[in-house]
Image 1 (cartoon, rainbow, N blue to C red):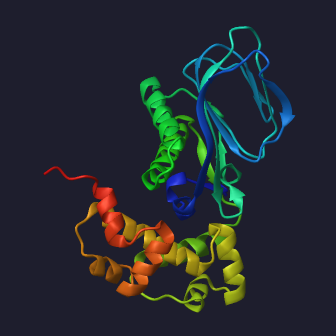
Image 2: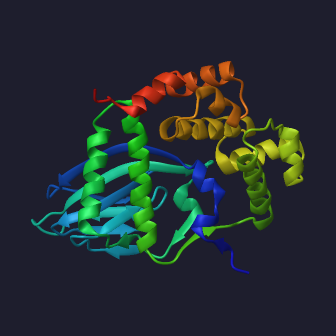
Image 3: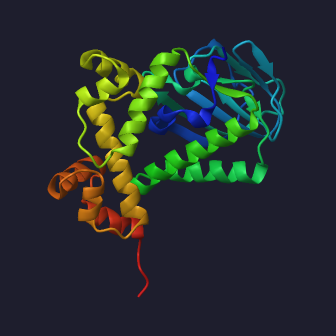
Length: 279
């Protein structure tokens, strides 16, 4: 039996936690080198000039301009210069976690290097660097969006990409639970109800759910509700009370929860997302 599934069929990816540490463009010095180390974060390099050496796991590479590399967390790595014509690269360091595991613990790829469209890739990295140097609410959203676009481009181009599926039965059960949450976000749900769908005892269900999503069931439901509310505030003209109803929360509780989550009242957030209006 094939022990993998397509990336687009996994609901846990929706809940992936993405955090950017650094983003920049660098022409590396001739002293740029490190051997046999294992980072606890992912690295992404888009090569624009020069030459050098990378080793990712057991695979050795000599990067060329136009190539995009992913160097996943938890994999033994090395890098160095090989001449005075050193690498020029856009790069970023980031984490991408699904529950307690890194994204690349779940994903098997056939290669760590692809050749994307140059103008698109440079544009994405330049936007990422610009927003990484800002400290405002909308920049945080845009950073996540750009990281997802970069990862999507990589997975689209790297060919054979599969999501590891180590426990079919548990995966199927948790898929059913997450789909139930998605379909019933306007209704009240209990841990006991969700555990019954998975055919688990409640305490064990909570443990399994947190391993898969990184959140408790209640935290996941509330975050899902707030993400849906954020989309409705940004892209629709629904009233705030209607939005609260659509995610199963009373208006006062929704307003308080949204402000705790975003730092803004729902009405203020909507005005912020709308931007300045011309008169």
